[in-house]
Amino acid sequence: MAVLFSILFHGVGILLDHLSSACLAKLLFSIGALLIGYKSIYAIFFSPLRHIPGPFLARITCKRNQIISVIGKSGQYAQHEYDTYSELYLLEPYAVAISNPSDVRIALGSHDFRKASFYEAVDIFGIPNTFSTTDPGFAVMRRRQLGPYFNPVYLGKMEHAVLKHGYLALKDLWEERIAQSANGKVNINYMNDFSLATFDIIGALAFGQEFNSLKHNDDKVAKWGTATIILNVARAAFPLTKYFPFSLLLRPLEVRFRCLSEFCGKAIASRKELLRTGAEKPVDLLQTFIDAEDPESKTRMDSLQVKVESIIAMIAGINTTTVSLTWTLFHLMVHPEIYVKARDQVRSNFPVAHVITYAEARSKLPFVEACLYESLRLCPVFGGYLPRVSPPSGITLQGHFIPPGVEIHVNFPGVNHHVGTWADPLKYDPTRFLNNDEAYRNLLTFAPGVRVCPGRHLAKIEMLTMLSNMLKDFDMALPEDYTHLGSNVLDRNGFPKNMELARMSILEPANPKRDCRVILTKRS
Ligand code: HEM
Image 1 (cartoon, rainbow, N blue to C red):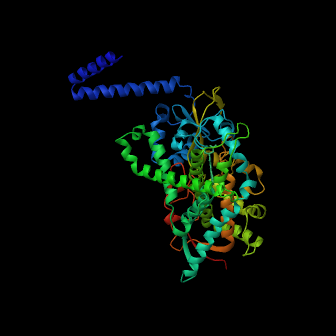
Image 2: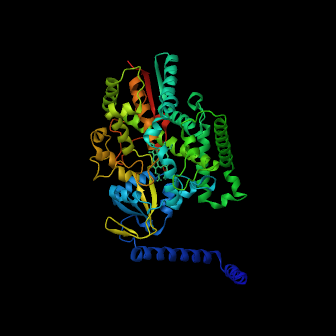
Image 3: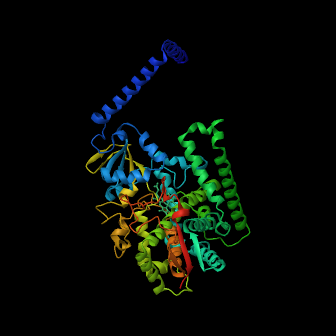
């Protein structure tokens, strides 16, 4: 074999020596043209996906979709391509995008549709976790371990911590700032404040620590979490960066990852120490991860797995909740009549001194809850695609057979703005969720199915308690200099006009300093 390589190598060397650079360019051009020609002919005449609509470039290369994703335009394209090609279209030569709710339920509803290998990039410390695993057996086992703790009843026991680090901390901060202001008003950046509060909640629940990030306006641990994800994804995309000297490129991220790892290690050690002293077991996510046991195999998590699950709770739970709540307040502020209706519902049901709990909000504030669900629908946090893989038997969707092994990407904007499911889908209209169980079933923002978001109940507790108590205690208005958004705020793609969006996989405002501001005063 070595001899063969050597002959080939020398042969190519001799050939190159005898070629002028013009000839070389011609040769490369011809090879490129042949390759494109071959791929085009295959895509048009032979590909099993040739009858599926979609952009031509998507038929011959996956680079198009990768570039769209790298430049952060997945959300924008997902909506545009749903508008252009409808419910099923080609995204890459061997990947399709789907938006029909029934198809989405099929793809998300069974472990036959595994998560695509892309998720393995989130194997923190190289080990699979609840989010990253592509192995159905492992996913099912982890659900059996964690399921009993992530239901609303068990999570209800953590509500006091959610209120303490969430709404009550926000209230203290805002009241203090109002008291210090000259005119009894304060201009807050609500995305920033929600982010710090949700971070403090996860700090208390998943690490057993008081982060006090809201108090100190400091979210360095969350930044370590973001750096960890970027590090893992970069290493998966560019494997050379795992090795010296290319590893130096990722050194700053590596340093932050180590800080996070050390921090988590200490948090787990101090919990174990607490338990050794015979103290009562805290009821939180960290304890859940430590205690979780698979009733069938009796498997428990070791310290590294506990550490990884705490990190995943932080990564999966902070931005998603912050952004969803941010969109809700944003929509209330740019639709004043809806804001007034929500506020009046809260105030007619609860006296000022009362702290509204999740159960109370759910039973007495259907309109406020509907406002939250409507923004989860209109601005789904995952603004792009969630990839799964077609099962060994393949699957027929929209009359097209999708062979085994083809990636099936759920188009989140497409399914949440599906024209056959939602009347006037790009309008912010919370009433569509009132007395309408079907609307709740059709809301797919938490990816219902076998890999449904396990943190959804926690997120709802956080969001609904913060929103309803805020509506009760404070009057809110847009700042006077907030003139860049008209009353007809959504563009034809359902995104707020004149607002820059960070459209990576998370659909969030890119300029919250400008766009997520509100003037708060104490309730009149
Ligand atoms: C409004 C807030 C949230 C939204 C909209 C949301 C949405 C989602 C979605 C769409 C998925 C599926 C992702 C995929 O399959 O690629 C998911 C998965 C997940 N979420 Fe959430 N999430 C939220 C909050 C949370 C919270 C608070 C936690 C934890 C504390 C959490 C933990 C997870 C985990 C661990 C998974 C992976 C589940 C699996 O693959 O089996 N999420 N979430």
